[in-house]
Each structure stands twice: as C-alpha cells, then as structure tokens.
Length: 300
Image (cartoon, rainbow, N blue to C red):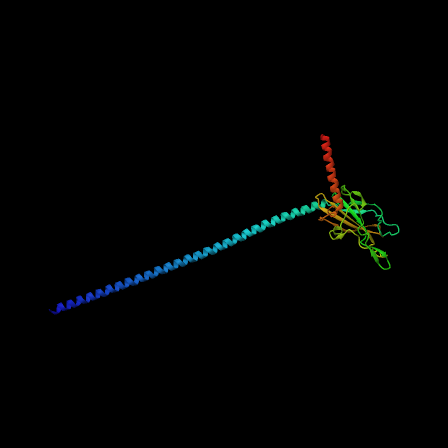
C-alpha cells in the first residue's frame, strides 16, 4: 500500500464523517424546526382559544347590557303606561267628584220647635207634632228625606246643686218625609212623636249623637251658645249617596246652628231605625197579600 492510497482512504473517511455530521446537524435542525413549529402551532391555538374566550366574554357582556337596556326600557314603558292609567283614573275620579258636587243636595232647617211654657229650655214632651221646614240650598235634589228631633242629653232639675236628669233623653219626634225636595225648594216636615224606634247604640250618625249637649247653666255671655235641641236630617242624592245635616237649636238666638254637614255616610235614619222599618215592611206585606187576594177574587 502506498501513501497515495492511505491519504485517499483518510480523505474518504473524513468525507464520510463530515457527511455524517451534516446529516446529524440536518436531523437536529429538522427536529428543532419541528419543535418550533409545534410550539408556534400551540401558541397559535392558545391565542385562538383566548381570542374566542374574549369574544365570548364580550358577547355575553354585550348581551347582558342589551338585556339590561331591554328591561329598563320595558320598565319605563310599564311606568309610562301605569302613569297614563293613573292619570285616567284620577281624571275619572275628578269628573265623578265634580258630578257629585254639581248634584249635591244640602238641607238646613228653619222654624222653632215647641218648648214648655214654664221651662222654655225644655221641649214640650206632650205635643205630638213638631213642624220644621227643610230648605235645600244645594244644587241637587234631596231624596229619601228623614229627620229626627231630640232634646238635650240631660236637664238641670236643681240649678243650685247642679242635679241633672236624663229621663227624657230618649223622647224624640221623627219625620219620614216621603217626597223629594228639589234644589232651591223647601218641604214642611211634620215630626211625629216617636214614629220610629232608635236603640241607644244606633242614636248617632258618624260621631254625632242624636241628643243636643246637656242643658247649660244660664250665661248671659253672648259668645256662648245656649243649645236646647238637635235635629238630624239624612237624605240621598241622585247617585244614591247618603248625606246628613246636623243642627242645634240655640235658644237665645231663636235659630239653628250648624253642627256638621256629612257627605257619603254609611247609614241614614232609615238604616238606623228599627221599629218603623219593621212596621213598614209588615204594612207592605199586608198590602201585597190583600192585592193578591183581590186579584184572585176578581179572577173568579
């Protein structure tokens, strides 16, 4: 073997080793590139997932804002509708109240009850009739008019000792007028003694009792009202609403003093009375029975 062969073999071996190194470096470079590609792909996927999640969050937030706006808009619409209905109802009530006011009767009494000759502050318990005029100063007709006159809750029997008696507390005169009183007109109400039964628990309209206050001591002070009787008047308007007028008779002025006008009361004298109502129902039933019997007789 000569040196040329040895050198050639050595160069060949070096070339093979170099080729091997190149191949190894190429595979290493390919592996590194593959790793970088895989990492880049994973990063891209991660970014895509984050972008999708962010988009989802933004969509949900936008949807929540839209839902909030829809709810607020719906509430505003409902509030607006409720306000309109409330305004309509208020307008109806106002119109109704104006209608009530335009047709409201208002009764007040005139005339003097009959008092005892020797005791001018005491109503005359022996008279059967007390005639009082009822004037309608309101703008509507008064219907189902009824009124009742009572004396004081108690009377002085001994002025020196201030001893009192309420024995006559329940004595009263009642009128069931039976006819309407037109606006600006008046009717004469003849109050019959008794003519109805008012139990003590029913002797009031609202907070106002049927009796006048207890008979006062004589006092020349003109500012003090010397009250000796009370009249309670109840009546309907055309809407079947019940009203009351309550007046006290003032002895030293010879006139009636307003206690109260009551509007839209729950019970009138017809509701509060017991015996008269029962008697009237019995009379009505008897009349119906007589009418039926008469018709049956005529039919024969």
